Amino acid sequence: MVRAKGIWATCAAVFSIFTLFSYGAAGNLHVGPLRIHPYATVSAAHTDNVYLTRADRVSDTFFLISPGVELLLPMKKNALSFNYTADSYNYREEKKADRTVHNATGTLSLNQWKRLKVQARDGFTRGADRPYFKGDQTHPFTWNSPGLSVDYDLNRWLGVGAAYTGETKKYDRSLDQIDDYKGTELTGSLYLKMLPKTSLVASYGYRTRSYDNRESEDSYSNRIEGGITWEIAAKSTGTARVGYMRTDYHRLSRSDSAFSYLISITHRLRPKTTLSVEGVRRILDTSRADRNLAFGSGYVSTQIRATLSHRYRKLTGRLKVGYIHDEYLHDDSGLGKKRKDDLYTGELSVDHALRRWLRLGGAYRYTRLNSNFPAEEYGENTIMIYVSLIL
Image 1 (tube, helix red, strand yellow):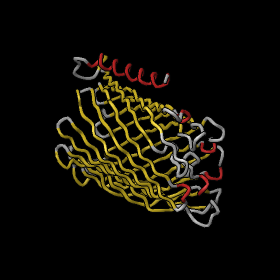
Image 2 (tube, one colour):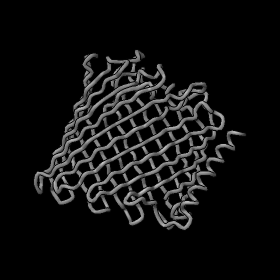
Image 3 (cartoon, one colour):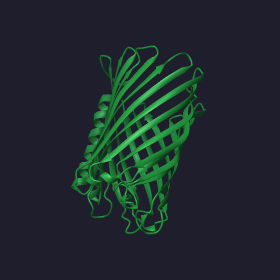
Image 4 (cartoon, helix red, strand yellow):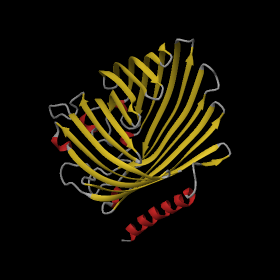
């Protein structure tokens, strides 16, 4: 009872603060040229499978409190932005599943040159994976990913790009540190402009990953892809590329290869109706956090998801569907078969703009994992209502 009162008191405090700032206000906050957008979402939800297990399913109600702030500092043709969000999960019964995930992203965009664009960024997460089973604890970790990208137009029709991305992940608990890793990715691209807003693109990517506590699975990957990218006003933007990827595990004397693709499309079907489609096919590394480390060092993941959104007056509805097929490349479990998973997701949500700064909504989400290893299968239904406040 004391815990519940504390949660509701926090919700009430967040609501009161935003009400005081927002009453009579007509936009975000400013400090000179600096734009400040504070926001917060308070959700109450119920899940019928807290630990995503097939047997001994546990249901519970939880509260998700997500305050955050976005900062934007325009500097003539350049811009500096920063975004921070804290997602705090508070369960009514399964208190060991409580966790807070802090996400921060900073971006510096330099566009002062006519042909040259430079962007530096960094993403940081301090969070925790949910427990694997009842009685387990959360699994705290720290993740960081700096990056730098450069694009240069050689002439009216030809452009080149280069990008660097670093990545590190560290777990707190010694049992989880088998997943600690660091990696880098270098990408080079060549653009041939067919129209002012449409280009053919060819890209090459090289990625390395090294583990602190399972060095035998250190790897490097090469990826070649080609396709098209476009930006037709505000109605349609997208990128579609297909190619080939190979990952080499030199200490295992093993090489895995597969065709790859990347799809990112946003299209306005009508003035108030938008369809977006995202997809990717890659060779990914397994981890204990995903409960798949015992089944092999890598797997081919084919992913596709789509979102259809429609706005009617002050109501906005969204339908999200997704499908992921994961195919493990080796029988490292020693059970005489390679693991194959099919993950299906669906979500329907509706929210209502009570004010410019206040939205009330609800959502239903369904998740189902089918596998040729029945013990890994699970299903989950989640119902959520939420209130969002944005300046």
